[in-house]
Amino acid sequence: MFKKISAGPTLLLILVPYFSLLIISSLGNIVVTRDLDEYIFQISIFDYSSLILDYVSWAILNLIFGNAILNQNILRIFALTLFLLTCFIIYLRSKNDRSLYYFILSTGFLLPVLLLSQIRLLMAICLFSIAVSITRSRYFSIFLGSLCHFSFVLMVFFPSVFLVGVLLEIITSLSFNISGLDRIEAYFELAKSLEFGKTPIYFGWELLFISLIYLYSKNYRTFIYAFVSLLGILYVHNVLGLSIDASRRLLELGVFAYGPFMIFALPRLINNEEIKIPPKFLTVFMWLLMAIQTFKLTELVKFS
View 1 (cartoon, rainbow, N blue to C red):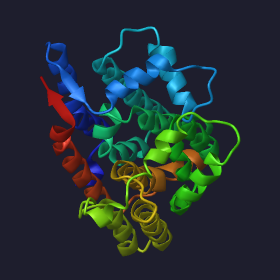
View 2 (tube, one colour):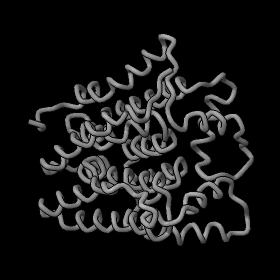
View 3 (cartoon, rainbow, N blue to C red):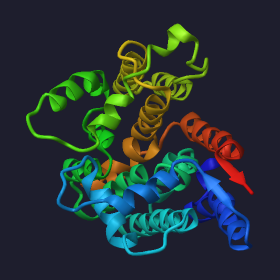
């Protein structure tokens, strides 16, 4: 069934809620989503001369919106436009295969976060996907993505998430000051969440199921990478004390890292090989994740 679904109808279907939000806000209703007010503030105070983490994404946002009267709806329109532009470029560079469909599947479950909250992560994923489609260079594209969102550097080898705490210590020990490190350090200030019963019982189940699907499909290397990545995220969360929100971002990035686009479409885009077909259970599971996350929009959006 899922083999017959094309990218166009899938894209239109998953974007219905986001177009609806834009229509609702254009009718005079106030639509508020998490983190966007902080984006507006950070854009207004951005200084091109200062060294800052995620410099490229903040610079792009300031270049576009620095002199504009900015509101949340404008940022949502920008995010949706960027996502659609990325889909269009992937389509142009990979005609007659299913690379775009796998990109939509791999990002669909993330769209509530990417389009309504974490726009810098959206920029990282989109810049990476555009760059890899054009340059066909995996590591150069990851480098560009990590300039937009520092966590994207994990896409080089995601199991290295174990080293997040060590990397933070090295960076903070450097003699020169990097703006934004205090925010990352704050993610580690919380006491270990399990000791206080704060970690949800479903924490990490998505990445666990994906790793088991690869195990069932006899793709043992990807299974090991995905499972070790899950253990690494749980380690930095429960042992190093990384906050639930930051750990959730790592889990979501991990699902993207082991989703259909990165594992099956990326070799096609880089080496112009014949595209591999993902396990059917993986495709079904990505649709399930997409449906669950779309339903959770009710928790992310407030109307007044």
